[in-house]
Length: 186
Image: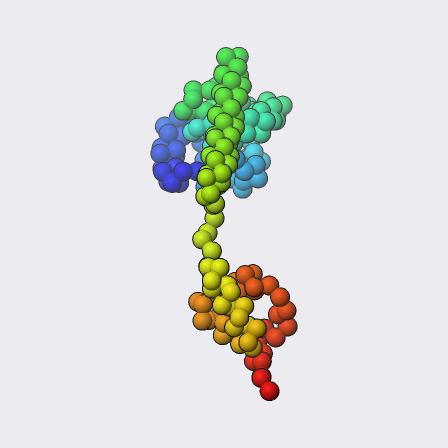
């Protein structure tokens, strides 16, 4: 969910205005199939009920997931309404509109994923890499190797560079059996 949608007041107001008797909520992404609020909602629905959502993507973002859920509802005699999109499966046009809306939303999501992957690939080709910046430069890594080779304790070397020992070991892999022992030079 986007940050603006984290506050559920707008959705609650719309559902209450539509006469919804019982409201269940999730603050998890609609892309996740296993949401506590959705599971609780589905367990309370009975034949003749109408599952009403504020917006279609609150129920799910994957077309297959949405269609399977709609089919499950239909088999149980439960109808579906989406207030924002005006979908109402109690009518033939509502069922058609739901199918088309879900398909278009899936297309939109797939295209967004494609654009993101393409953008990342182009950025990588230009030499940009994602993720965190390295904690140690190549010069610092070489100095750390030298300090460790001269007998300095890994915890002291890590402290000198302002990193944890696990970070030091990630950059300077090798024998860590003397990780906490001071190496005594004869």
